[in-house]
Length: 322
Image (tube, rainbow, N blue to C red):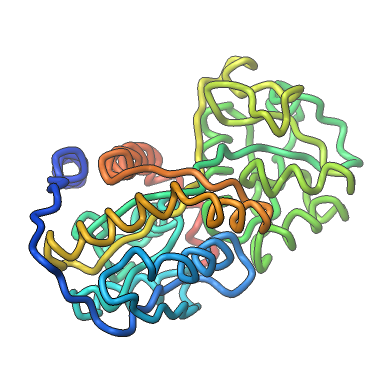
């Protein structure tokens, strides 16, 4: 039954229509809220606040944009807030695609939302994930983790990093142990450097900030080496063709009309061509990228397949944390 459901979800993402603008005027609410299911200061929050500042000029009526942080239940509270919202364009969800899909893979119906029913708009912040180890560990490459003779411990927030640590461990073939409870990637990475655990896995842009403090990168999970870490080999180069990515998706509640969705898609597309906006994102130390609706749907479909393959492993790893 699960395989049938996944096949249907993948098909839904793959063939979901992306309609062209009809030219019919669309009226949006005067106030529009971006719902971020994480606390302030993180990647989604910071980048969404820049989007909220610049996006109104590309929307009819130049509405007032508000960013609301709905924290709780490992991101589920925010996603549930989105799906229960009126589908009139007054609420836009902003979250990490792999986080939302990973949470659904772990919790199933208990997640409180069905990602396949959400209206995907566009995505940004497409950045490969990495694996780093602490300064006092002896590991120099992925093979060392496999031959360590003991579980590799990961400091984790319980989000994407937990899921990707589990998947990488299964693909590479080393035993692991999760050290959960860290409030955010910077805190977990600092804990790794301090020696609370052996390793941590986060996006390359964040991980690269901690090399000077003692973090040692072992691999980038991408098809090619990353420009931020040109001397760090990919997992593929080390014999493990593993590609794991973080990205932010903007979406509307189920039932939102195609016309409303297209207005936002068009506005976001124009926004990510504006130099002033792009420079503002870069000033926050994040790299602005853009994925249109079709690309975003493909990302979601690929993640659904990945998480389905490792659903049992993810559920077992998350069970003690629930």
